[in-house]
Image (cartoon, rainbow, N blue to C red; front, side, top):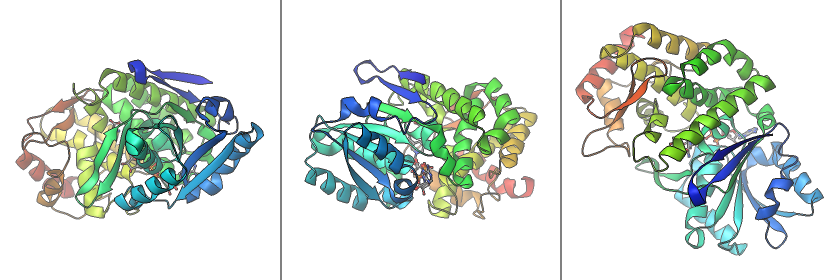
Length: 369
Ligand code: NAD
Ligand code: GLY
């Protein structure tokens, strides 16, 4: 069992990683059981693929479960689903000292975390992430949110989980495309500040994507340790260190907005294209060696991920994409901070990017990429 602590004073918690942990989760969930029962929120895909073994282990330990299954997909992070979930939780007479279990991908984790943050002014929750994206990123760090008509993740709260349980074998039932989307966030940690890990990804990415248990566990642990360190340093994205985790997200959000935040382009796929764009824009600005951007682009494409606007299936102009960026919640006083790079493992936050230069770069991309 690997245990990665997230050091946040009284909000500190552990991330436990082990193959098969879902079957044995009762041991770690026991402290969160009240009145003999545990409430689990999941989605219908995870309900059929992963819930049975979690539930069997809990039943064997004498723990009764109440399950709230929600529809799968990004549209579940909505006001309507939040309201329905709150009503169900209140009907179950959840109290402030209770903990709700979020079993699923980033959609379930973000929604349940937000519900927990406002239910009776804040109750506890436990994350059991079942997608690679959620295991390496969204289940750690306490960002919770829903989407609104104005955009993605615009209503939310920082609310840390009490515990994160990661069972890498739960990825055995995850569709290959979803594994790829999560892999983009793995690569991100190498690109931010760990060039040796990017080298590892270049060598081992294919094994990981094929489900090799050793490569998978190594990448999850590496990613979670990187995220835990950043979150411990800058929990609420104030100093700028946590903002490094947004590498690829500004370009990526524009692509997601253009494709409607759904199946056409998954979040992780948008991040992949966004990271390649951030590196190539950095080259265009004379900040980064061209070879580094070429390595990033080649590796993402080798992993089956999009690495350009065109790869992402988007035909919009630079002006249209930049207009989407202007709705980003990271806008500060009319300026949009960008994550740019001096090279692989040398990402930094640039608050002075000229949006006209971004527009021109994106318009030139079609010919170049
Ligand atoms: P998701 O939760 O929609 O899961 C992807 C798909 O996989 C869904 O259809 C789901 O039902 C299915 N699934 C989940 N686990 C499965 C399993 N083990 N076997 C079979 N199917 C399974 O998507 P995601 O990529 O996990 O998360 C994306 C969301 O995460 C976005 O809303 C994004 O904004 C959010 N996010 C949040 C943070 C954060 O810090 N809070 C960070 C990154 C992304
Ligand atoms: N995924 C970005 C963050 O957690 O800050």
